[in-house]
Length: 501
Image 1 (cartoon, rainbow, N blue to C red):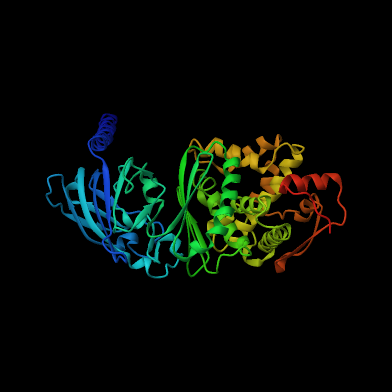
Image 2 (image 1 turned 90 degrees about the vertical axis):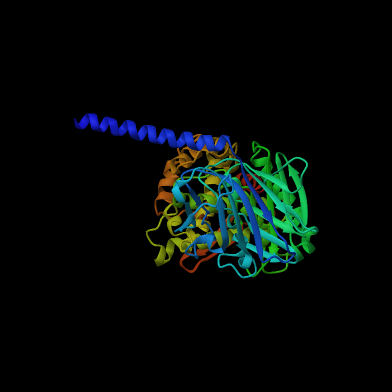
């Protein structure tokens, strides 16, 4: 009897799940998610949203990411929400925790939404940085997409139409609909929510390298430095397009504007940056590196994602920083002296992380579990791992392969198919590129807490280092004479002929 009842229960569960999925599939096939974003003023206080979206089981929500300081996330800024069915009959709704709503009766089908977004957050300083929320300045409005959209669990293509003041334009990474400059299509919910929008009056520059259609938006006074920013970014774009040469056709939007702090954030197919100080050629080591770092996240962090996130932060941040630094130097955007200074700072903070009491017992792999606290381990430790692994691969392959080959293979194995990688996948791929097992390197220096012999690695490049790790000090000098091996390795790494002092 118990077995018979259990069998009946399993049959009931199967058919319940089957029916729910069939219902959701029917909703998908017979409806299309559409949003109309309306702005009525050139200094807007509100954005008005009208939408029709398919719903299953009556559940609606907003993505909370970026608004964790508010108990109700981005829903804090939603006003006058009204929901109707296809016959324009109003549906009862109940607000629930975590920026979500429940339609009475677990309604399934197409619903019509109308609501407005309070834009007060774009006129105040956002605690995490305004590039993670929005900013209005000089007749332009930068917005992260998350605060705008109420969505359902049915994930499909979305059409977004903008209704703007007469003098305004709009740019986003979404695909523009044929024949209408104010209508766009987002591929799925991630594409809709994890991206950015710029509206109003702003300067934009179009660049194309390989399969990448790249737009740079420079709101406000940032456009005064366009003659410095655009050529630098074009060189970085060219280097990355060559590295990840199998990148499929992609639209990408980068926004750069002045604000109260230096900060940056990467999204699915976009990124945003802020700068405190005037953008000049001398400051390229800061703002240029910022742009190069966050742009690298399009591949390492967005298309390539590991599970769990906490154990890949060193890889995500450290390798992105390493390639940003190296790309600026190889492209001639910074000189040798600045590149060596960057090396000194990364190695000094890595050695400090290894020596200072607050971090004792924390491995580079573990550092991401407290990313902000363990920043020297995540960013500088990850950079040091990348640097040493690059030299190790070059040594093991007699110069035939390097860390760029490793990143390219990681992208082809995990980024292109959208397959999350594990920590062991990193180790296996590194061994594959090196042509020999390098698991010991990871066991000792990434999983374990041994300190990398950074001076030995620097010596392979004809450099000598003096450090006081516990004080966060490293000083690098070029040796007066170098042998052929050191000279060739330096040239292969940097693309530069070694200069003697």
